[in-house]
Image (cartoon, rainbow, N blue to C red):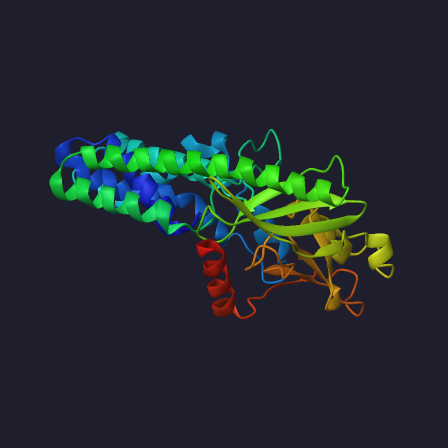
Length: 333
């Protein structure tokens, strides 16, 4: 999730292990430990845009790396802060490990994909029960952490953590409901035996994006699981990427071909040619409006590039203000 949420949850973990006289220290070190795994964004290359994609939520987010990453963070922060606060090295490391341990599991709850079991597996886990940014999750926990510091009472902290557990549980229930509606939409099109991907739209658990593949096509719709009723916004369809068909000129020995395979892996196979640009490959799972195929990112190829040159990675945000207002209207309907 976003750095603020990761930091706040890490701070909460640090507070749980802190005595009253050390509450501030546990909060700060837990927060820094909670954000530390995202330092993998520093792994990048000026010439290879796929390097950053490959290593984001990679080994630093593995469950097996938690004690190592937390210890590295703790040792560094001991020399930066711990000694000044007259803390011991084990104390500093403990709070950092606790904060670090929250990061990967929370990221796994989103839809982006996290390599939780590296190096045993390169599978990207995404439980799809919360958006990468959701203030209804973050703000109550932030308030609880602040009140715990202010009042020196952990009752607020416990209340904030209970809220987080309830919110994620609600996300799990909504996900199951969204999948069920997606299956009903597929059946209405006489598409049998499909696997539904349901992902929460930006910042809420009410409107979801439903994606499935049938007969070489991806179908994208928006659904709103309700307590007593439901809403559906039928969306678009697009051909699944077929390299031989869509990019017949692409040399299998070229770096661009290798980059396409990496991007396809990163996107869990949910890739297609951009309808507006035949040299662009897009990840159809993410868009500002859930019923649209208007991807937020992709890669661009060129027939003129030398065999050793990489693809170009790009992002696009067309009319974000208008899309956000449309999404709010969908949530409020």
